[in-house]
Length: 241
Image 1 (cartoon, rainbow, N blue to C red):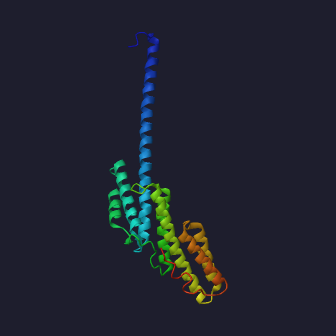
Image 2: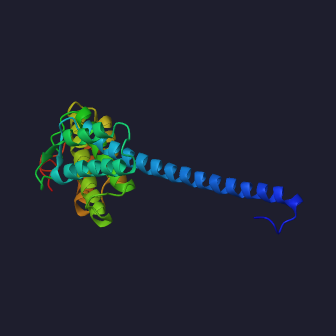
Image 3: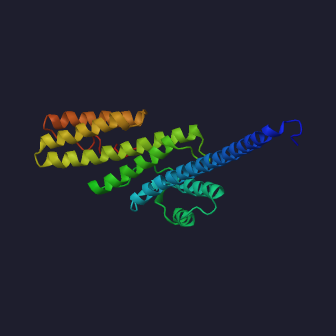
């Protein structure tokens, strides 16, 4: 094979070929490891997104979600588990997580019922808003695998931010008035200032949220003057869609 090479150089050529072969095999092994690591990274990202939705739903503790949101959360979890199974058929715990996604779901309100439930305690308010915020974070940071394209996901985020703003307005108005009714005007004003800050920073940039902000501002002006607003000044309109 190496007849054209002087005998004294043939061992060096053999060593060189072995070195090239070794490098080629090492390169293939490295590429395989990178490919496997990328697959695992993708699978873990899919599971993490599904877990984020599951956590948001579990937190609701029986509080309702609009049907459109509940169905999206369920579908996205199942699609993500299916995608993980395609990458790693034996991914640990996958069957149990998929079964939970089928079994655990929120109470659904009607398709058009984009109003918050009655939140008669601070604890219920906190879990409801935290759940909505978790779903919003998912829609902001993750790509939906179902039918929600970026435009649809953006529209859904606006609706969820409006729903959250409705819940925030109703909650802070209630606790502010409770404080005012016992004469704690300073605390009442603090609650409304907190509401105004939330609406300014987190509410959707639409007409309904602007209305909520102006109603909160009117409430602040009343309480700052140690005056209770009439029931017509924000009570009836707080849950308007």
